[in-house]
Image (tube, rainbow, N blue to C red; front, side, top):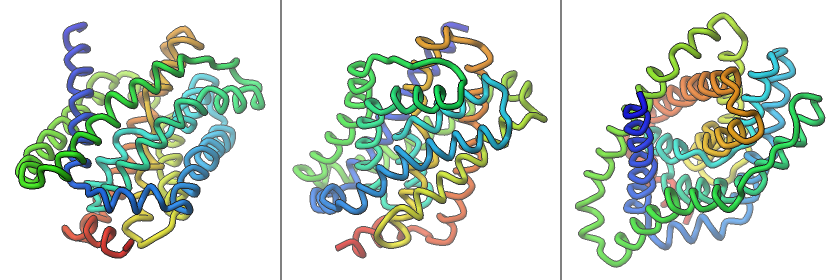
Length: 297
């Protein structure tokens, strides 16, 4: 079991790095500059992910009357932006992958700083749980190593060795796709007991509704063409599991009930976000990303 766990963690790391590397290979400095200098886009993305989605998580948890463990898990998920699945969903929907990669890394870095205070504030106001204190340096380091560095390497290759970047892009995308499927299957098989235990409860539905609502909030709180706005919706709909898992280990003593609820909520959230991205992809064919770049100029 320990060997399988280590193998799954290794595949997850490969998936995150390969996805960000692929996003970098498909980016250009000009396109990236247009995203990072787009103050309204970045400002609205921060509001959507740092304010709107955490409040949605709190409201949905209260509305559904979730038990304590599931309430905590939903708040942890909602308060942790910048999940690496965001860039993948941008690829799935033929969206603006450059914007997704740049905003995702930004959100993950800032989210490492805001996660603890946000969770503590919500749980204290809800009279559920206690304060959350995390190793911010470790979280930021993880974001830099697994997300920023691969993206930057891919971007530099695209800028200084364009033929090489183009020739590697398809292979990197294949690695990202294959490891994506393995991670999904691994998450399901590794946590099926937790998911089954929550069948019939409102926890799975709450995770599904949160992801769908976050997709809508991220889309509405965005600027630019529709392709870019729905890409921001995808980024908002999938959250960063790393800080949430760290919080459960540090602040909640690895409580099985909270861990199980977290796994179930993450899976039900993907069950909402992936079909939305697939539907968008079917409507766009293969022209989404380039269309977004062209229209943003």
